[in-house]
Length: 108
Image 1: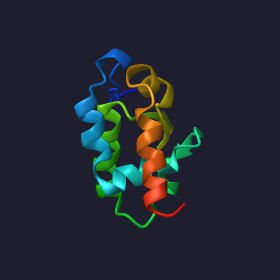
Image 2: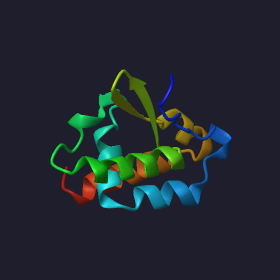
Image 3: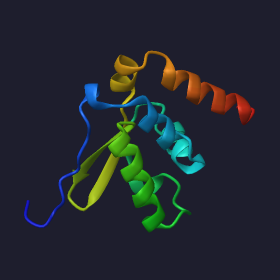
Image 4: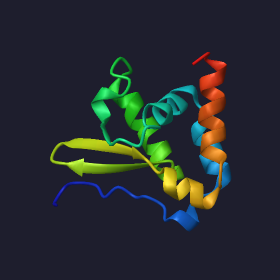
């Protein structure tokens, strides 16, 4: 595709713990990961629709470049999935600990 930027996703073995923790250390990005925790692919516009698109683009990039999410283009839309299997391979149990702890802190 001409004029469409390629989305870089690190290979599983390139995912670094410090990058994952930094990405998930921001409350908005943690909320995005929580929204994707079911494993379903979601259209980016339906996740936190009240946050400005420019801010969300920044958060999606941070999550994608750290290896937490995968983005897929479909026409003019972007779809997101949590890279649960890759994160589990790289850091067994980490994602569940973070997401479960967050849910407990919120009283869910």
